[in-house]
Amino acid sequence: MKTEIKNMKTALITGASSGIGKELARIHASKGGNLILVARRTDALEALKEELESTYKVQVSTFTQDLTQAHAAKKVYDFVNHSGLEVDYLMNNAGFGGHGNFVDRPLEKDLEMIQLNVTALVELTHLFLQDMKERGYGKILNTASTAGFLPGPLQATYFATKAFVVSFTEGISYELRNTGVTVTALCPGPVKTEFEHVAGLEGGTMFDKGASAYKTAKSGYDGMMKGKVIQISEFSFAFLIKMVPFVPLKMLSAVIEKMQTVPKK
Image 1: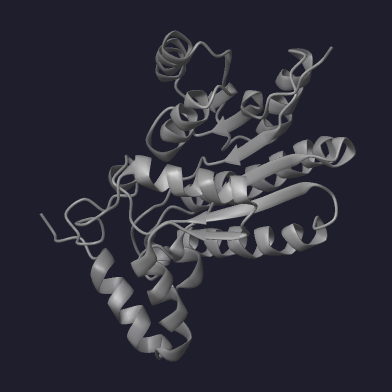
Image 2: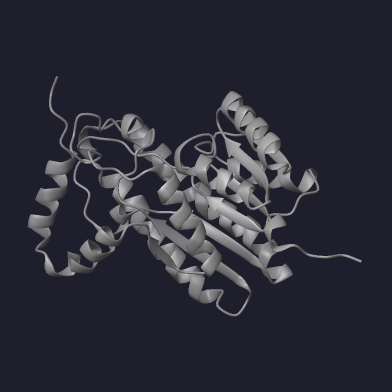
């Protein structure tokens, strides 16, 4: 007789080798869930796999893939199918930012950002969502940002990609309201991860009081499990976002620019 145990659902997590993705993996494994971990760094993935399997006695599969490459999402989907696995929870967490005036930044870097933060997320969602809808069950967590509600001078493309993720999540969440599938956008403020270094924001004030990756991941995971559409991980930011429409755009942009200004060395 087959008995379905809720906490044995399989989660696929992108950007799983560090930061929020790594903590999402630990949280899911601690509940007895199996995992498919996707990231660029094989060594980091294998180390996390060993940790989770030995600590929580769960099954962990890894797939090394750079999602900034075209058609990478299809490779992930094919790997899952060829492995005979099913994805119950899809956590689109991979993403990166980049500092500087848009006109002065290398265009290829911003196009890579769009490919990862937007295109790969949309492709993975479309591929796995079809299976979830057919089964009548599934949960998707998209890592967005409170940046998705704000103008983003000095990170214009990054903020725009997160605005897309917020809007995309809201739209498809409503479309799926009667299917058994839920979609959640995790919207944290600054988080202490590798993002600050990769985005070139070290030395600025944006991350001075950044939240922990674990706290942020826990908020997102809990929001996903409850089927919330928008999960802002900190109460203070939830309040600030509600005030955004009442602040003049020029003033808001000036504040964001100042926070993201990095002192010259």
